[in-house]
Amino acid sequence: MPKFYFQLFHRDGVGATETGYDFDSVEAAKAEARRVLAEMAAEGLPAAPLNMLSVELFDESRRPLAEIRLILEEISK
Image (cartoon, rainbow, N blue to C red; front, side):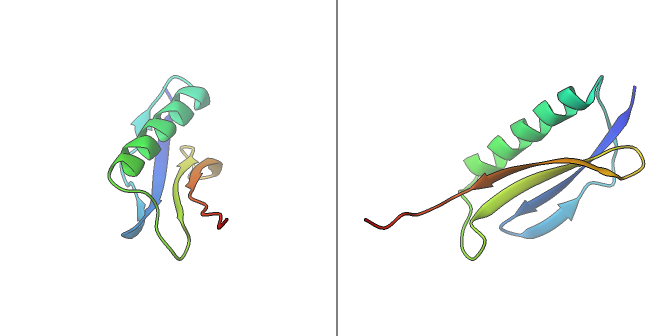
């Protein structure tokens, strides 16, 4: 089973996991990245200056595969 790594970007800055997680496929790892992002958003929406939360997914060789982002946009009316 392949290992995947995550890097989180949130209010406290960037945090990379040193632990590899086993998933059956890239799609399963992406689903976990989405779940983690939802947990991060439940703890608080993104704030200025970037207004963004993200989970970046890497393969066993630490090559980037995908980035799942939540961007908060305020539109003045």
